[in-house]
Length: 189
Image 1 (cartoon, rainbow, N blue to C red):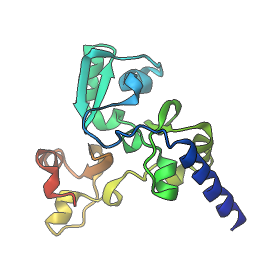
Image 2 (cartoon, rainbow, N blue to C red):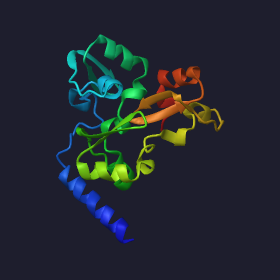
Image 3 (spheres, rainbow, N blue to C red):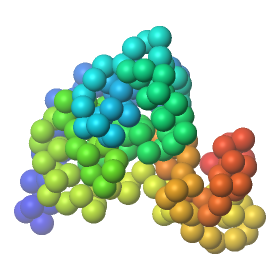
């Protein structure tokens, strides 16, 4: 109980410190990752700023890339490169249900994904218990939204993932994933 109180107090302090967080979270055309190229971060482990001339919009955020090859790589598998919760802090969302923008300057690569945090305290909390936070953005516990609407309870596969409204949706096949991507609003409440 004492530890839980300490964690809650720390998170409230984090939220207070982060009141300045980007007010555009969730709005259309938000610049993602402070302009850093997600492909070079995850594939080359290099932090390079992308160019506005080589940008694309995905899930209402603009991603910048160092070159056309990086952009093509991203477009082939965007769910691989989009940070967890679209760049919002997974610790803040899971622990206190608050969307706080994370920063590329307080980030972790974990199991092939990028997680962003508003400051080092929240990053440390993630490191201490990654299992608690790593799948907080997995919609329906990984079950297929299209199958569920059709009355089936089928698990999706990580290789068939779409990011929609900062959440990961997984599907059992590429065809079902494409069906969801055509009109997600049918399947998402």
